[in-house]
Length: 132
Ligand SMILES: [Zn+2]
Image (tube, rainbow, N blue to C red; front, top):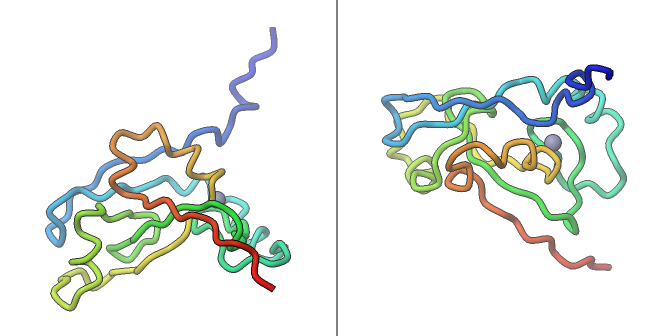
């Protein structure tokens, strides 16, 4: 039998919780492993992309399902808990590294979906209908 572990690389993204004084809830910090091809994906962007996945750089069309995260602490791979999105975007936020909202494609979300409580950190964005 061949060792198949290598072929499964990138199937799930490593993530951990981080505690920071600027937020009541821990943030999820995802590994950078998934962004190996970020630059290349940005350069070879798909036609009709309105945005791109913050983790892998692949284009997102407005007709495709995707997810949104809000990032802080100077790193777009550090996701803020949804309970604090409103606070995070307010003037009261003490985090000088607040990064705002970013999109995540369905492929990358699949790699994250087994992380405990991940749904408290990502918002599902429904695709919008094609407009002329
Ligand atoms: Zn992605």
